[in-house]
Length: 146
Ligand SMILES: Nc1ncnc2c1ncn2[C@@H]1O[C@H](COP(=O)(O)OP(=O)(O)O)[C@@H](O)[C@H]1O
Ligand SMILES: [Mg+2]
Image (cartoon, rainbow, N blue to C red):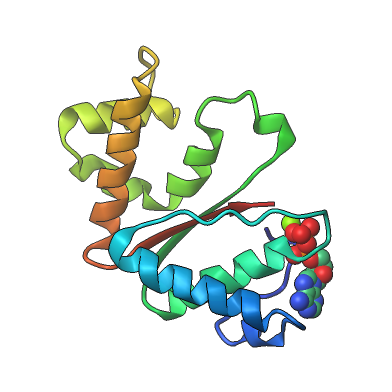
């Protein structure tokens, strides 16, 4: 997602012809802040998905949310938990504060230590716990794309 130079709040307004989409994204974020949710942007290459994702991330950051991000890469498709690794790497310092079994599962999943492949549900629980802890009362938003 580093291919688009739309980094700061306010730059989203410069997207041409995307007022309706930006409005939908903003109302999704507002709704998701209380109820949770997932939004999928799909379309042909070059149509502006990453630009909209950047705008969504900027909006969420401006609203005080913790935003974690990942970018898909084909060569990582076969690597276990590679997307999760990207998402959670900035939060790694908080890992030590997780309960033992969650911390151990996530540490193995992220490749920080060796061990038997962790149960996916435990990894998912650990991820939620880590993000919740790092968000510290704020809303958390995850953005993934390429
Ligand atoms: N609404 C828009 N207004 C102006 N430029 C845009 C808009 N949407 C996309 N772009 C520009 O078009 C190019 C392709 O957009 P991008 O978001 O990377 O497409 P995608 O992720 O769908 O492949 C980028 O340079 C981006 O900055
Ligand atoms: Mg893209």
